[in-house]
Length: 318
Image (cartoon, rainbow, N blue to C red; front, side, top):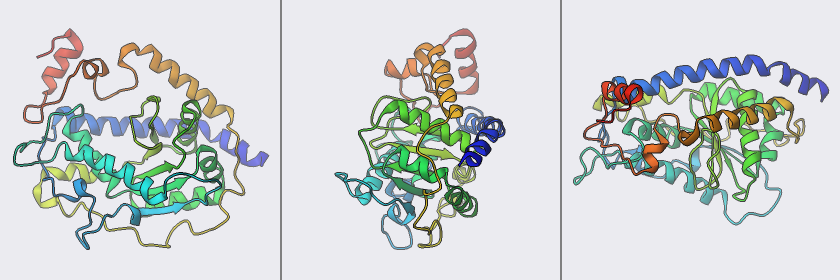
């Protein structure tokens, strides 16, 4: 166990470096579809699977079929895994729905988020893979077990899907969630967001159920392809084949249940960094101050890069 934790700590710096490089690339891609070549609203209809969550193959909801792992329950919870998964994925699909075309709103509805950001969530809930755990300690045990880590990473890279880590416990400790988030970004060279039903954490967003999104980058290609209507079905992924990944029944045995100093330090640093941002808080791609004052993106008249630069440099809002 000492060797396991030592290797983890030694890999912290390389993974942090990889995380920052990978995240910078992702940020540039988001800026591209928000400011340089904005994805307009209404690119997909409200019947598109990114909105409905239903597979074109059988018309059924795809969400439960894309659950690749669910840990054994160690205690009772009010909701079944089926209810929990549908709760989160329905929430994400509604974000996409805000930017979908309808008769009354051909460009989608005005929204706190621009169409580009809303579209990204379609690649997460429809094309993505889900894993379910009791709580953060349960997930920590699994992801520090080298066998689970290896099999999880294999699944993500072979399937080329964004993973969503879902937690059954809705009455969680927000501070622990923040630390767990930093653990995941220390364990993997990828960025990620802690989203939950309590106070906003770090760079995360509200969610009806606590969930951590490890952002690997598989959202980029299908989102960019939305510009061309011919791609609107080709970007859809079929359900993940059952009983193909993460098949052991003893995952977590080799893991740990205590947090170590790398994630504890990073969590404190992130909190401090966000405090320095003042009223801007942990919202990166949109201005929290404007959103709190009721600002909504107009999908029929998106802000241009020039207008954005004028606002950032001179404080001139057009």
